[in-house]
Image (cartoon, rainbow, N blue to C red):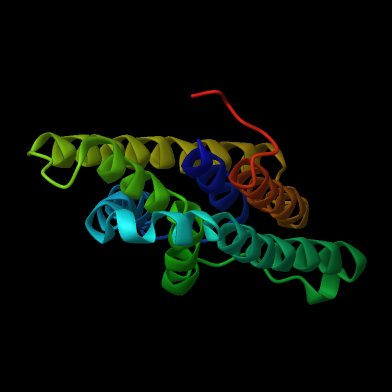
Length: 189
């Protein structure tokens, strides 16, 4: 779901998202790839790092998402206060990669947990599971990007408002990941 939220935010704020038809697929591909790759990395790192990574992964996600969301929030507010200084959100490979890492870093601990629970001799099924995670994340992200673009059209090009909404959503996502990581909230799964 965090991929979906992040994708909706990108759909809301990236004014040039659809200038090239492959951009939504690139963004969704990065999110899907990282959601599948990070648990694999965690699985391969193994048990030795589980308590180490688990103790700070949520703080990294909070910092990265707050940084990205904060920048969006500030840009949106500046655009509302000084319309002549408006600058629409633009697609960036660097930002997409940073978002992918921020959104997937907690999946590292999941890979470690999988290794702890099933042992180091996992068979091919682990790779099938990680492939399903990657594909599902890709599809959810793609839907989120187009949903965000649709919402942006409803806002009629007021990308400052979209930036503010997107920035707040990313900051809240970071806070949610952090609160879940420190055990304040839990979904009970």
